[in-house]
Length: 482
Image (cartoon, rainbow, N blue to C red; front, side):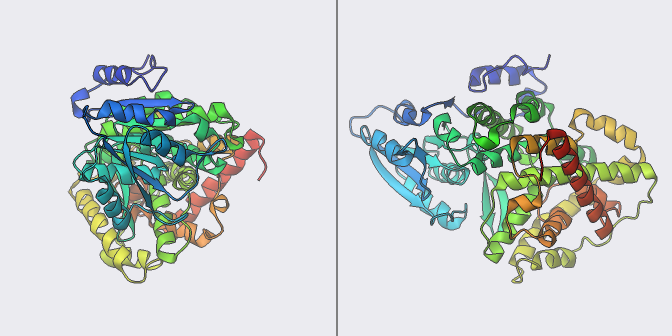
């Protein structure tokens, strides 16, 4: 039995900490700083009590900064944000800051500066809303000196509510930075179950990187470019995830049971990321492709899609890239090291969405660091000499493209590029997949394919074709029509 098999309730953080302490190399992990996790109906109403627990007793009324965006969130017929504010105002002076424009909020300098100004000098911060709002709140409260932070989670769309990092937009590129653990996360399952179906389906897509990213994380450790690989976050995540193709049915209809299970698993995902000290444990090829699409959308003025939905579809592609790697290695294909990873190639790749060159410069800065680490590694291509040994090393981390596609099909989550929005044409999708290795300093299976000379135009097409085959097979197995 694994170290985490006995934990049935992810909100029992003391039990989670105990299991982590008993697992492999606990001293190499980041201490879990989340104090309280509540996943239950009506959890949002606990916000005042949780704030009270976090601040020192005082004679005058404490001041709470309330951070929200402009999206209307309902709890039944009521306005959830208004309800939370009214509850807080019974005990505290509340200063509300509304971030962004309707349907348009990024974790950029403008939003972070506004939120930091709002949180400076207050006694506590409460954020209500999306993963974007919570990412902003984590950065702002950290910048303001670690002001106590309560997050009210209103959708199971991402896993970032319970971790200690934030995804920000820098020079048009998505980057992950250290922020902080929230003190309290209140996941209101009443609200989450009635959230737009596409938000929870997006969270289900995000979940699929559990079955792809650990392989990339392990690969980087084998090559020598990432020393953070640790079995504990991996095992913690997989233990709670189970088989999403079995419990995900009904998610697309908003059924309460799969929505609650998704919320629980996403909470554990955030914890796993935080203790690992690296987002690499859950962010590989699939996240790179999603970030590429986000960058393209921002640069070209398209509506940014749901990150998790993009991750889910790209997870099928990521798994297919591993299938392609093993097929080439076992066929005896000649290794012909690539020579097209220079600065001009990277800048050309991103000129497609940002002719100004700013995005290309930012991505080259990160990619060139990866090239340096790769060059210093001890013959990474030697891994391809024995594909059976490579596959054995992956073990349960070996991605299964059809299994991932089947889970997405059963849950009614986006499954293909066409499900992600009309602006993501076949050419844009192919651009994102083909060039994803150039966007950041993170080694994945695509880097190994590229280094071997197995990431030509024909190889990219072959991987996309493999993903299509997996999708068709999954639909047939799940009894789902296109």
